Image 1 (cartoon, rainbow, N blue to C red):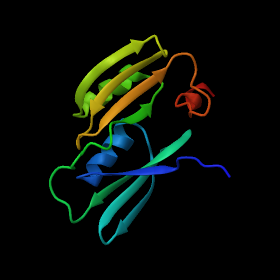
Image 2 (cartoon, helix red, strand yellow):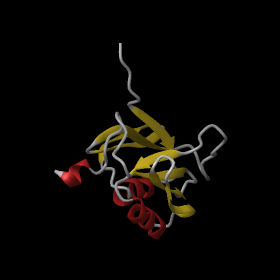
Image 3 (spheres, rainbow, N blue to C red):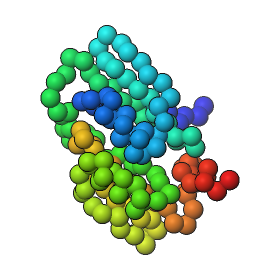
Image 4 (cartoon, one colour):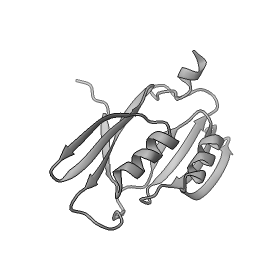
Length: 142
């Protein structure tokens, strides 16, 4: 019996604004939308695969998202950390750490916070994507 992490869902305060960021800035296309009595939802996933991200705007919730202490960060693999970081900042994200090459792994990473305060680690691998991790640059090399 095998398992994979298929999808995770995060609350957002404005679904359309969040779709604009995740699809328009980060390049994750919307795969489906759902409206239920209590929430508006959208599921996004890269063409290359990887986990799906579900965004949910709770219709009975107002105000900022309560970040609590359970979630630390979301990872977003990219084939160009500097360019994606610049797009995130231009879109209005908060800079937490500018792109920096970390030779220990070796990767380039940067951190931003989106409009709801989610910490996002942008990560670019320099010696090939690790086994089992979808390669965001695979479509660019065909």
